[in-house]
Amino acid sequence: MKHGTGMQATPDQDGRGEGSGVFALGYLDHGTAPHDSGYAYVLLVHGGEQRTAELAQQVQDHHGPIVIDQRNRVAHVVTDSASRVTAHTIFEPDTELVKGSIVRLASRQALVLSRTVAKGRATAFSVTDPDLHLYRGRDEEQYDGDTYVGDESPYTRWWQHNESIPMETEVVLRGRWRLEDADDGDQPAVNRVGGDTVVTITSHHGASVEFTLVRGGGEHDDDEGDRDEGDRDEDDRDEDDRDEDDRDEDDRDEGDENRDDERGDDEE
Image (cartoon, rainbow, N blue to C red):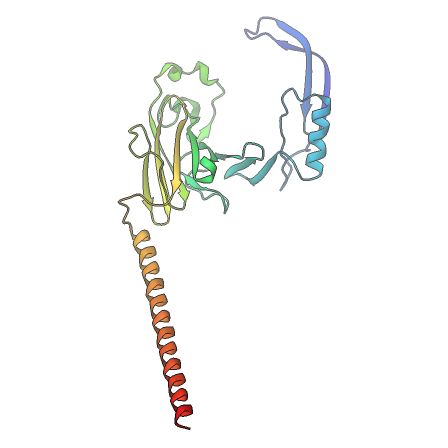
C-alpha cells in the first residue's frame, strides 16, 4: 500500500485553466499485469488513528468486520458481521453463485442485499438494478464493428436525457420461499421452480425494490416438490405405522408365551 500527501495541480473542468490543492493519495502497488492475485479492503469512515489500528489488528487476527464468501468475476458476496447484512454484487447474469449463498443467480447484473429479521423467521431483501436503462441495446456510434472505440462520457451522449426504461430482473433463491404479506399488492412476483424460488422485480430509475420472504410454501401451494415431500412424509408415517404394528404383534406374541409359561407352572 502506497500513500502520500502533497500539492497536486489538475486542469479545470472546462480545460481552460488549472487548479491546485493538497491531496492525499493511496494506491496498491501490485506490479504489472498480476496473475491469480487479488485483494480486499475496508473503508473506515472517520475512523481515526485508534480505530484504524484496532481494525488492522482484527484483520491480522482473522476477526475482521466482514466475511468474504465469494470474490471473482462472477460476483462479490460479502457479509458484514455487525449488521449481518449480506451483499451480493452480481456481475455475470445467469451464472450460479458460490455454494451456500442464499442467492443462486440473477438474470442481469444486480445488487442484492439480504438480512435475517423477525428473530430468524424471515429474511428481508433489497434488489437494485444499477443500470438506468436510458436506451436499449448498445450505442452503435461508440463501436466500429465489434470493437468499442468510444471515448465520450455518458453525460455527453444524445440519450442522457431519455426517460429511464422499466426493466424486469429475475433473482433465483435457493430453497422454497413465500411472501411474508401476500395480501400487499405492491410486491414482486414469487414463483416456485423445482426446489428454488424465482423472484421477479421491476426496477425503474435505479431505485431499490424491497420485500420480505419467509421459508416454506404457501397455503395453496401444491407444486411437484411439495407433493414429493408429502409423499415422503406419508411413506415415513406408513413405515412408522408398520413398525408400530410389528412391535405390537411382537408384544402380543411375547404375552402369549408368558401366559403359556404361567399355565405350565400352574399344572406342575
